[in-house]
Image (cartoon, rainbow, N blue to C red):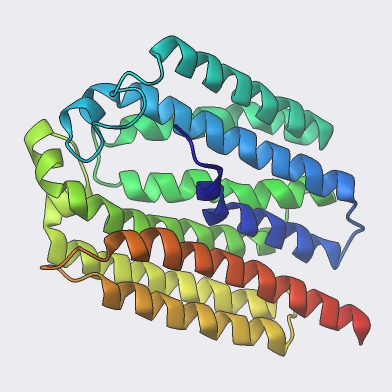
Length: 278
């Protein structure tokens, strides 16, 4: 029902945040382990909850009708137990990262679960999804440093616009279904052509936020090269998806976006290691 590989969209951002924090305070393998556990728990719980709340729509939608719950491979009871278990994993992992993280885990899980209802009343659901997932870098920063920093918001904003942009692309394939069922999305509201343009604009903002991190955290040339590689990957992603041709959508969504996240983590880690060696 839930693929751990989908965590690759946001997990590298959390680890990137931890590496940025590493330039200011020590980071232990224990911290990294519990950040990984918290991310896996939060992602699994949120996606499981989404599958439960959307089951009646997934059953009607030809694209999603073979998902595990609509197809009867997993019962609703089992799915609820799954969500409860991974919610507990997230909360426990947060507690292991500190008292502040433990307290914040409760509003965070509410925000993550709330996303599942946004398509019922607003086409800004893509932005809300981006916002919910963008809490990951800020959470990792707080876990490592024990405090909040305005600078880390640049990474959160980069993630928010990055996620919202490619979620708009993904929603294009369900435009007609969303209209029929009265669901809200940017493609259903504005059409595919304008949706693709809005996705491009969001990714331009994402690129700008990535670039600003270079100055805010005093990064070196390795990170700057990474930013321009990410910019190139954004261009490739948007060249793959056309208003009248969505056949490459899954390549753009799963492969290119995973590559962007991994490129970011590789770049920030390389930059920090070079800094320490020099």
